[in-house]
Length: 212
Image (cartoon, rainbow, N blue to C red; front, side, top):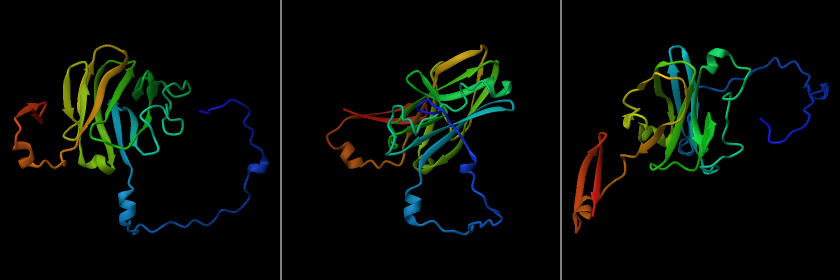
């Protein structure tokens, strides 16, 4: 996709002539420095699958992105491409920003309070499976919960894939949301107890501490 219209012309002047007969492969034994490890991007790849059909999306967090639409961060991919095969067109999986659908979405720096809206479109009925395909950065150390807005259910995606059924076809852009919980946050028990009343409750297998 381009951000402006106009002609795009390729000529022989763009061709680089050469043998290109040498290939140097970097060593697999390269050790990453602490700086490189600290700069690993915070990203999660999700997959929606039905039978052999699958659709992957990417959610990433960066100081260069916003939670709104960013021209060079967010991508709609082949969601609206008419040239892809019929099999691929049967199932579409995406995150949303407003009413727009994306297969790649960049957001501001990761926080455990982040919530991402997810949806899917289908031309076929039956059982579907939603799963985490890959995690990177801070997301490796937080819990990832999928909330099914239609069934009012919350599921821990790190424990297992989420399987659900759709008996109708159509567009379900508001069905899911993704939520994160950072269990590594330290709580000073003495500070919590001193002069405070609190209630501990269990909500969807998540312990909540509410002080008053």
